[in-house]
Image (tube, rainbow, N blue to C red; front, top):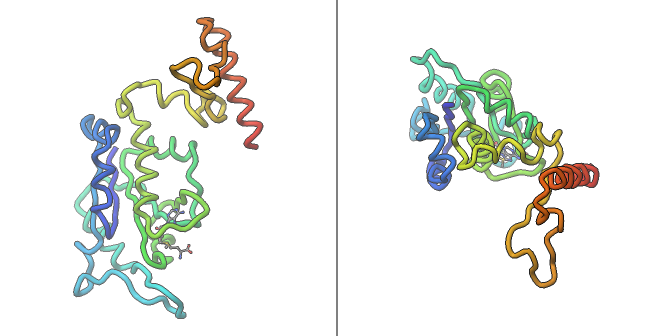
Length: 222
Ligand SMILES: C[S@@+](CC[C@H](N)C(=O)[O-])C[C@H]1O[C@@H](n2cnc3c(N)ncnc32)[C@H](O)[C@@H]1O
């Protein structure tokens, strides 16, 4: 998996790139590349944005700037990525979409800033528009990290324990339901007890209990 993030704030990703599962994915051959819009802007003085036509507050990331960034990154490459624009109004990111993106060999994530991105980027330069939720962030960087995180952790070897990403909330293994609760030591704390079945050693009963809790959570969140 090659993940290219186009941004005005590549330094935001320093912390993210240092996280264990991201480093694992990179050590196993994945790439996380940060590309700065200003490095390829065709405008003078590093300009990347402009005032919106029709007036209004804020500045808009220009289509020629995004186009130049994509050309610079991919013109000499045979490998064209699935280009994803991050926007509050995009397709909601959920587990099926994350699983779909994890199947791609190459993703490009376009981070907006300010008032947003010229609509022609969505219309002509991107394959999908993705939202991480119905709220507005200051920029696409955190959204890109959310997408990158959920995608990278699905890659074989990224997580310390290979099974961790198989049976978890919203996975096929749980029929798309939230995961069941977990408990660890101490078995009793301030009178709060771990369910007896989890201490029983009876794997069949434990399995049954977990699946029922998972279904219960699905019902209560519906
Ligand atoms: C301040 S926001 C622009 C919001 C835009 N004016 C609107 O009302 O929809 C700047 C950038 O942050 C990113 N962003 C903000 N919220 C997001 C979300 N929920 N999901 C994905 N990206 C988001 C997008 O890249 C967006 O272009």
